[in-house]
Amino acid sequence: MTEQAASRREDFRTVLREQQQRVLAALAAAETIDATPMIQEDEALSCEEYVTLVYELHHVHLPELEASGMIEFDRHEETVQQGADFDEARALCERGEDR
Image 1: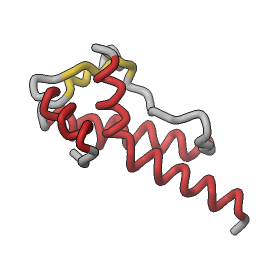
Image 2 (image 1 turned 60 degrees about the vertical axis):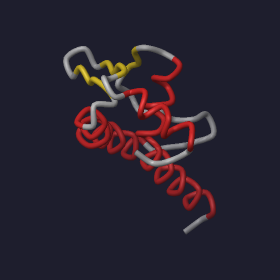
Image 3 (image 1 turned 120 degrees about the vertical axis):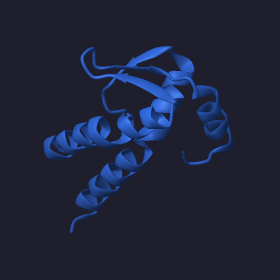
């Protein structure tokens, strides 16, 4: 595996692993956000990886956050907003804890 391919694979793993934290951090700055993957400028994903990320976000990460009360996910409008327990999530993010 080339160094570039290894770097891309690590980018994908990082983006996938950090989606919940990135969603919560974005909601701390804005009341409502689009339900799209959060990717940083220096992260590179293939088309296939991006599609996988969208699937994971919509069918795993956002439903888990919604079930915990931290967010409200509107599938029809494709938006996410702070849930009833968002303040608890904000405290966890500030301490750097997962979930």
